[in-house]
Length: 385
Ligand SMILES: Cc1cc2nc3c(=O)[nH]c(=O)nc-3n(C[C@H](O)[C@H](O)[C@H](O)COP(=O)(O)OP(=O)(O)OC[C@H]3O[C@@H](n4cnc5c(N)ncnc54)[C@H](O)[C@@H]3O)c2cc1C
Image (cartoon, rainbow, N blue to C red; front, top):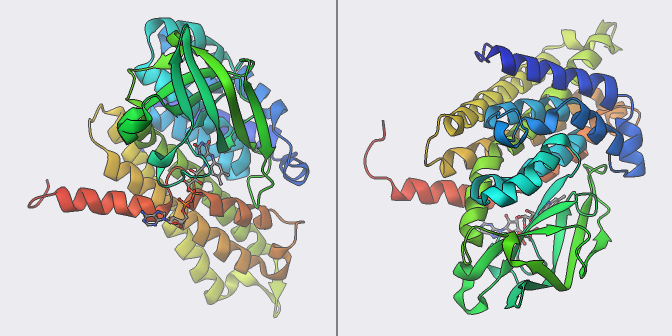
């Protein structure tokens, strides 16, 4: 389908595809098997200026928008979803700083993120606070010279590998959701350490880890935005980053579709390639329809954001929910096309199937995001243009 990408966007997309095929494809199974963070690939992404894409030009970036980021994530995920999320999480970890940081904070940190010298991460989730983010317990107590952080974050993507963390903590416990603030915490800050590294079903090459804060003194100048705006920043952040998760799902589903078509062409049963069977053809056709629909929605939402629109909570949630449900369905059907060998680790479908599930869970579960969409629908009066 023609998506009328600009020349620059076409260049970004084809460069990301080349990196994925030349550098990621040969090592993806090994990285998955060893559950090893893809440092060599991150270095390649840095050398090819991929981290500059989502950073403004004045901070040594390329000034790209949401669609540019989606194109890279999609192409990386077509080959390896774990690499794609390790890359996308850097954008997630940078977003609060990009949108709400002071000039001084931006000058200090963004050029290093743009060059790939420092990876970033975003830390909200805790044992008591998953879908109910307002139940966080990590505190940030005002003391001389800054804020003292205490608490444990869990399931943090790029945990332990990133140099810079955006952390949401309570500055005023009694104020509930209005009592949270956002902080930039550097990896080597005294009192900041890393706990359990999760062993996961899928996206195994990505790091998912606990962050532990024990009397960790964060300088006052590292607060992002104003005290009490931590949750507002978080909600805005997810509105901007969910299309990127949609793109992760689209890329993964595209990879599974291509693998299924290739396999169906060469697998012979009853004297013919199985692609000549209508039952298989219809499965492939449905997969192709779903992938294209998810891509169209994801790109449209990314373009809405890039147009400078003010409200896109609903649309952004739709792209994430729709594309991730499609990725789960398409990888399941792709495994069906492969039959028994699809269940084996010798073929890529087994990994793609495992990698798909998490996309329905993180950055807001699909149930919670359906609540978000329904809430927006309830607020609406009459027919919208
Ligand atoms: C691999 C991985 C990486 C992650 N990366 C990060 C990260 O980088 N940073 C970060 O901060 N977090 C991260 N997370 C956390 C992730 O965002 C949460 O796991 C997710 O939001 C769900 O929270 P939970 O796991 O506590 O599930 P719960 O909130 O306990 O949900 C359990 C079930 O209840 C349902 N449910 C809960 N509330 C409602 C409701 N109101 N209506 C309908 N259904 C509901 C959910 O949909 C789900 O099915 C990561 C998680 C994983 C697994």
